[in-house]
Amino acid sequence: MKRALIMILVVLLLGIALNGFAGGSQESTTAKEYPIGTIPAEPITVNMWMISGTGTEWVNSCMQEFKKSHPNVDLNMTIQSDEFIDTNVITTLATKPKDVDITFFWSGTRVHQLVKNGSILNLDSWFKHYGWNDKYQPGAYNTNFVPDFGFAAFNYGWYAFTPFYNKDIFKKVGVTPPASMPDFWSMCEKLKRAGYDEVMGTSGKDAWPLHLIWNQMIGRYMNSKDVAKINNYSTLPKRTAQDAEILRSKGAVQTWQFMADMKSKGYFHRGVNSLDWMDAKEHFASGKSTMLFGFIPFTFLDAVAQDPNFPVDYFVMPETEISDGGLTIGYNDVFVVPENVAAIKKPVIAELLNTMFTNQSCIESAIKNGINPSNKSVTTEVITRVSGNQSLGRFFKEMAGKPVLAIVDVWLSLPLIKEYYNDLMEVTEGTMTSKEAAQRMYELALEEVN
Image (cartoon, rainbow, N blue to C red; front, side, top):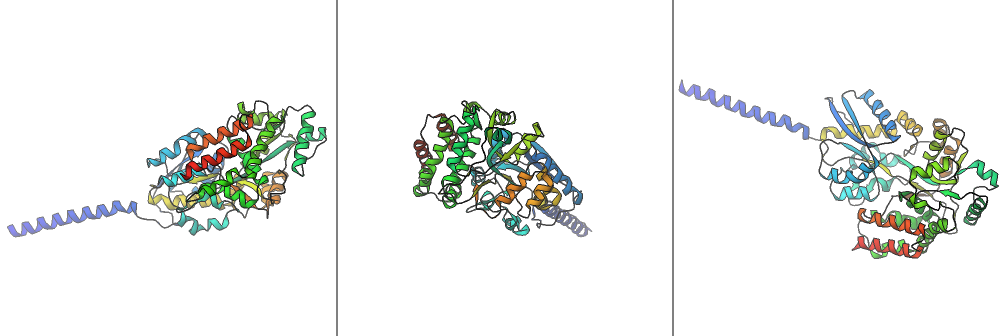
């Protein structure tokens, strides 16, 4: 009897132990890998940080489209400010938070810093499964790919930064978009003499608009090969002093000189470094400035939002003897996924991104909200039909077949970016020469090398 009781007790204890192991096994299923392309059936919540602006409307419409096919998935969007995204994402993701599964971010060296910190997920298997890289517009590769790591980000849109002009003012003064750089300077001078104190609108207080003009003009004072050396500088796994030489080359000096000349000749606002981006847009929309270095397509939308009949159009900065027809395009806005995201959420997030990228409804929503989709299957006809803007469709047609001088944004490490921005403002103000600025860029680059 005693032996039987002992046997029963042993069986019971074994059962409890096995149950415990089974329970442990059950809990561990949340850590297993789920195949990309297969959405788990259980309830899943995905938390996204998204920057404020018109992009939130596009993302929200894509979320609703996604939920039609996946009602078990709850998608939560937390809208964050520019300042929060810029100052907090890198440090916050480094702490491996549990309350964010995907976040919007800016590309360039910021993404490289996230990779260096071990904060974000490698997306190679997602790109391979969906064939995303083959579907992207030319130039988007550098936005998504980090050498010695792989695909680190998911780019969803692009922009061009180019001069917009008031057609009525141009007609009144008797000028037309320039066909050469001498034409450009002559056009600016005629507008100045006609009494327009602010020929070209931009802002220096934010610094980044000056940077984007600088980047635009690099594409005019250098050929595509040299532009790539500058724009890809931050992606080099090992940088040398020789790599940095491009930053003080003749083309770089000419680019800095363009910034200085625009201010010294009186074509920028006399207080350009005290204006922010909202000021610059308001000056253009109200006719205070005849032109604005602005975004395609946002500037169209901004101008028409204030006045549906605003006579706005754009032109591409003319070529020089050095340039070779390339268009400077920014693939700057990306999503990154935290490295510690739950395994069960990975296929959900991958499928959501693919929906944003390829679903026709999402593509049209992006266009309506001022986003140029990065999917290269989007045609001029689609852009024109959905946006209702012939000029925007014309830009798509013009860019077809031309070299894309892709912007990777800023090529310096984060601690040095502010120094570069300060140099932009100093050159624009006339307190630093173009040669000094090019030399400074070279020296800042050497700090990274060392």
